[in-house]
Length: 174
Image (tube, rainbow, N blue to C red; front, side):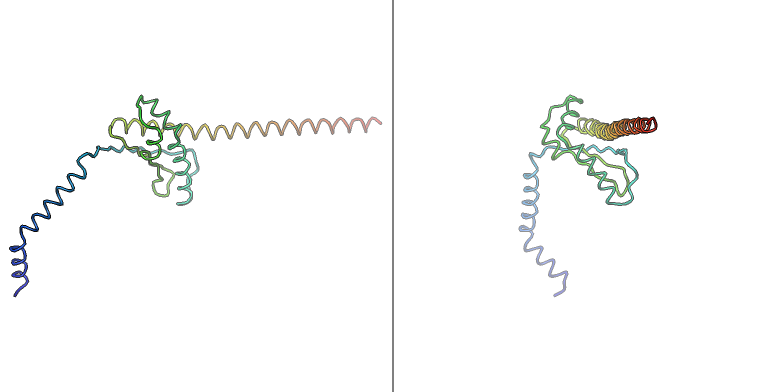
């Protein structure tokens, strides 16, 4: 018996079983996804105010910073409020917002999933802008804080110099 004869014999005798299994599998797939809600993904790219990363680990660190900001409940709540949409903030922050580094560059990809494509796009853009603004506020605050600390140190040192100068004048006067 040749191989083609064996295949022909198996198919002829078991055609009802094969068709039944295929129909059953297709019906199961349809039933499993019958109540599924459509989900749309909107992705935007952004760059934070950091130096270009030297490698994959530096790029991952930049992405971690962006992710921490983008998925914070306060940031998500603000973005949802800004676009005028009501959603469960924690659900969106934890399960519908993703931010990842694109390769080893400083470019980040922010993706938002939603059942409404317009909401997904508007939320992605609003969150990206919010991440950039929050990052700038943090770094500007650090610079301002550092400048304030330096000013305080300069004032203290100036007072110390004036005090030493006064003592020297006293000693010279004697």
